[in-house]
Amino acid sequence: MGTVMRSPNFGPRRDGLLPELVVVHYTAMQSCEAAGARLCDPAAEVSAHWLIGEDGTCHALVEEAMRAWHAGAGSWQGRGDVNSRSIGIELANRGTHPFSAPQMAALEDLLRGILSRWGIAPQGVIGHSDMAPGRKIDPGPRFDWRRLARQGLSVWPEDVAAAIPADPQVFTALAQSFGYPEGDFETVLEAFRLRFRPWASGPLCAQDMAIIADLAARFGVDGDQWRSA
Picture 1 (tube, rainbow, N blue to C red):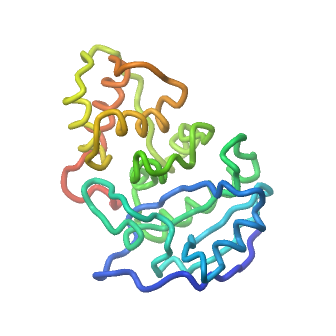
Picture 2: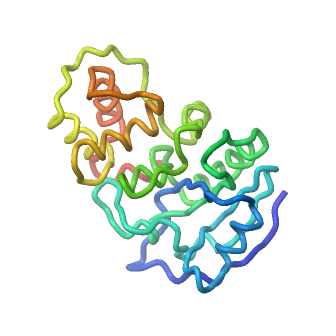
């Protein structure tokens, strides 16, 4: 079930770019209605292509072919202007509670359509926190990335043996190969854990190293891997 709730906050994609990423956000607002009002407010100068309520209703805000204003500063796999390269999906959630079953089911259905329409590979589905470490934390530690990966809608590390010594320099290089922007080691580690080890704490460990090595080996920068065959 879906509705149209048009936002005026968009423009053309720049330099002929097409969607090759999907960026998942949470709204951090008290209700879907409040989030929709802000995303459609010209004064706010923010928007997304889609807004999904906790009841699973999908609201279309901006045509997917257009450039919505959702990502802000950041990059992925060394490429900037994420707004021109992506489709933004906002999930109505304050960031303090789990995402509802109807909302996750609606997201999965929406992602299947988007990835098919635009030829985007699963590794192109990322969180706001992935492309903007230290600046954004959404969709946060309660978002179930593994669930999406099981359905081919994102990626998750394979079962790996924690046999790689902890080395911040190596970790940072592998994280950048996977896609994370350049930044200080602690900030990148926090963003990585937020998605792949959300309740982990403490210094860099062998498990962090094994996971990022697996992700970099399977999905790292090596030509144009964002588009599916």
